Length: 264
Image (tube, helix red, strand yellow):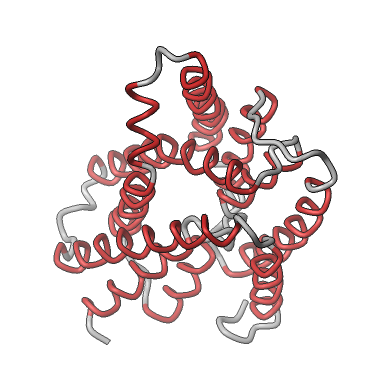
């Protein structure tokens, strides 16, 4: 398989899985077992493509927040987005600097997929017991921020799944509203994480030998597929449950633990 085709496939996988609650890290790990590991700069770049995708999806909402901050409701929502990002940064940066992260190998990712799938089934049921609500409270803000750190420490957890279901458990149980808040918080979070990782990569001198054509192909693929995946997910969850994603995670994680696709 050519480098360009490999890059295309990895970009598509990143775009499809970054915002679906099934773990992009887990899927990229499996794919790179088959297709070969890529550089840190490559992985950072395809994540940047996913960030661009979610920014494009929410471009009108972001513009409304940027221009309507004088309105109390918009200002409150914007402050809560920034508050969740601040929690992630305040807790996540020390965690990153101390190196508190499980290795990105198949076994811990597989367990994270299974446990995360079970968590999704339970959390969705519990979240639906309360009255329907689209209200983002400050407790939800803190929980979403911490959930993003948890997803960073445990590869395979899925940032979107951890944060969305934490929000639902605390009362933000209208799925589109929960997804919107989590995705909007994800924009500054992922920009900051990717920028930090890119700075590390450049300072360590690892960018000189990069295949820039493959990187560009993967970036574009991640952007296009990420945009399509988010638009589809938002339409889907308006009238459907997250249950299929949960069972998919459990099945994939179990298959990995049994050694079927990739081994231990």
